[in-house]
Image (cartoon, rainbow, N blue to C red):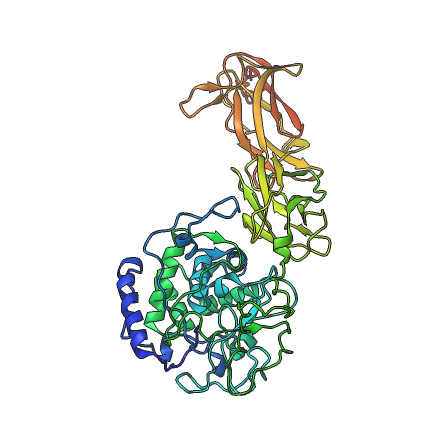
Length: 582
């Protein structure tokens, strides 16, 4: 669990060296261009400090130990695209990402794409770091709001085999008033969290033990200094700023490459925990403390100077009690809100319609209910857009999550229509379990105009066999506002009372120069303006009608006149003779 500038001393040199060699072997096939030193560390120059932090805050996790396990050799199948959980084999589940943790990574990456689009942060990078730092929050042991059910702590940074970082938070996050420890699923030390912390789940609290908060903070940490993570050099620099170790870099890159090829969503709490850490301890080492129900800033610290988690309770004895001896009831595992959900159902969502390019005025509401039909609060519902559409949720994402309130209802963000018209589907699924859920049909209609007017008032005339001097220009509006990107059709019709295409008189030309009297695929510009191509006339004289129509009922008839040129007397009168002088 690691991310700080400066150097770190580690325990377990033999184990670490073996891990580094394994990383090097995998990196040769999965992380092209990456190199491994002898578990070496880069200098502080390899990682630029955040402009948000002070000189003493140039770290994320104080270079605490991290998991060195490498991804499976087999490439995972792509994750489902419909928001449902995949059925996995035990081997596949080892590489799966718990549902709430995966949702947090994707939500953080989506927010960074909007706030810092030049960073190009992939959610798979957050997943790779989350795997290496905490084994995906210890296999997804989080509640519906994304808070770990027990604190995840790195060892005391007391200078004894690790960096020396004395207490900076009065034990608020790590429970230690003597020294700091890395905290939470992304392993931030308190002094870094003080400036890097974010509120990712919208509850008004910045909690390093919450996977939504920690993921968003990690995203901002990796996106500072103007780094573009689509550039391999900036990517390496950003990862090394999290932990200045080439072995760490290559481990993260290996998981990044693995997750980019696909991954599995597994139920919360069922993910596996890695086996080996860079300090030589096992995956079930001292980084997992007892459950804590206190909020940040009010936690009861552990004994100062120990940094040790509270001991696990002793398992109950399995020896049968002697006759007549009363027995205590076996402890029961509490049912979480997610486990109590029986199904999802629609909660009064209105008809979903919008014009292309506009926001939907209606929002999707879904209710989580238990078997008794009662609403279940504090569970997360995923809303996924499926179908051939460019519609998105606000922010440009195809997937959004919502937390149910006291009545068990979650509301999706507003839908934004794209330019593709027609129907698409939004599917609601429960995060963490597979239950039946509703689907919603949304429809995007064409842009419309209710008025078309010419932008000029001059008569449109032409001589037989000639060209019209002026092009036809019109402006479209809808409810007195500019109607941009509205489709239009222009047809030279027989008469105002007969909309049949005319077979004589004015005409357009196609790309091959052939006569065309109907134009389709026309579109108004951003100002609602439409300019038609050049008009020509055959040898037929008379008055003709050009009809322009748009969706929404706007229609404009333009009169065209073809007439022979008027004769003009060009003979000059003789000049009068000068008067003869007498």
